[in-house]
Length: 62
Image (cartoon, rainbow, N blue to C red; front, side, top):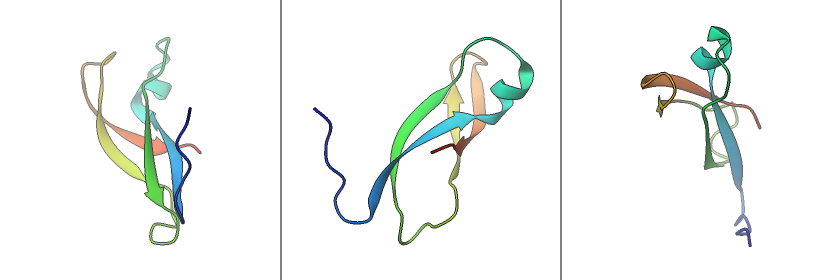
């Protein structure tokens, strides 16, 4: 069962930008939440990419 979002909180998917450009198979994705009212633009966070074995920038895709 999935949890219901409370109020303005929405679930987002963060995808690695460097991995997509490298052309290697697979993807590095993380699921997180954000407050839609306070953060209107798309999120960019530095997260660990286990395939590239380093910290990379992950951007919101949904």
